Image 1 (cartoon, rainbow, N blue to C red):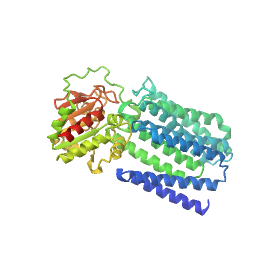
Image 2: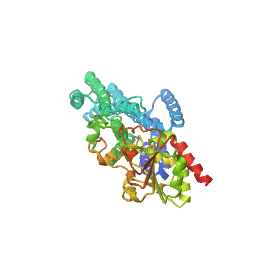
Image 3: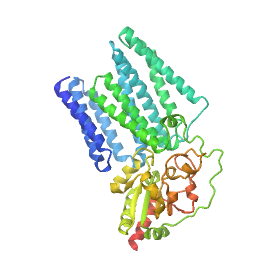
Amino acid sequence: MAAWQVFAYIAASILFITGLKMLSRPETARRGNRLSAVGMLIAVVATLAAGGLDYTWILVGLVIGAAVGAVAARRVQMTGMPEMVALLNGSGGLASMLVGWAEFVRATDVATFSAVAIVLTVLIGGIAASGSVVAFGKLSERIDGKPYLFRGQKTLNAALLALALAAAGFVVADAVVAGGVGGTALAFALVLLLALALGVLAVIPIGGADMPIVVALLNSYSGLAAAAAGFVIDNNVLVVAGSLVGASGFILTMIMCKAMNRSLANVLFGGFGATITAGTAPQQGVVKPLSAEDAYFILEAADSVVFVPGYGMAVAQAQHVVQELAELLSKNGADVRHAIHPVAGRMPGHMNVLLAEANVPYEQLVEPEDVNPAMETIDVAIVIGANDVVNPAAKEDPASPLYGMPIIEVDRARTCFVLKRSMNPGFAGVDNSLFFKDNTRMIFGDAKATITAMVAAFKEA
């Protein structure tokens, strides 16, 4: 490798690491994203310049990919970002799988390590690709979000994984004996097909509130597949980039599991939501509706207000009017905070991105453990389209699939406004007893229209 290419790869790696660090804070995230993109551009240009390739098809792919990316970036709404991220994860896994496949077809003299890298690239990349397609279907509601469970499912998955590893081992063993992998086409095809099947079977039993964890985990898989592909084609910067994505995705997965008080094994094999309201009595109680105009009078007298955003805020595109109402409340003397649950929305950081888009001050963003201890002193908690992350069943009902998950305990606030279109349960499909609590007032309708009415009442006062 030429010295200039080594330096280009080092520069790209530094930009990746710096950009990833900057993504940890909303105020620097955009710059971090740009730095990472510049690092990837440097890595791609350096690789192509040193490759001595025919650039015809590369340019065709570049034009098509850039066009698709530009259209998606402009047209995909924030409500569609979770499924968009799932597709991007799947694209990364698919690309790595194809690299491993191409290297298998091309290789004639392969070391043992390279053979291991090839089968790992195909196995992990295939799982990430097909699993991400299923996650996309569930998040976009093209596939029912409920868990799909059947008798012997775990045994089947374990058997298929064992068979895939055995076939992979045969490919590697053949490389050791024969010095190449070309003679094991059947075993390799089995690895590829089983990887795709395992991706589907690994995600279909997962539903409801576990989907943000699945998105993070699939992101980790796509990174690991890319790192393995880097070893396959002997590209150091791809190894670095894939390792960063794989490690950060796995750390995020662990953070999300902790936020839900669940182990990773429980997420992967527990079939979250499989007991959703089955055999249980429907929620009983009296719903106390409230108009936006009456809500204004309560807010006008409030000294402390906590907003709890959820996926419904994204659907209503209400983040800008939420910030406008927050500013009016602050001017009125209220202490305003935005409590964000780590699994609110349908992907990690969904609510943070929405509120950052509306220029909500970073210091107003708090996590559940920051606000829960003082919840009894909060005058008004405003729940905007959130459901599972405020459901008291998580701490009150041992039979609930949500039980044990830390929540934002708005049921302990002096008054709780719940902005929803209907009484339907959230993405996990679990009925919410919060709607019937004595301190809860339901404000039905479009969240953006409701908050706009509150804003108008403040301005007219």
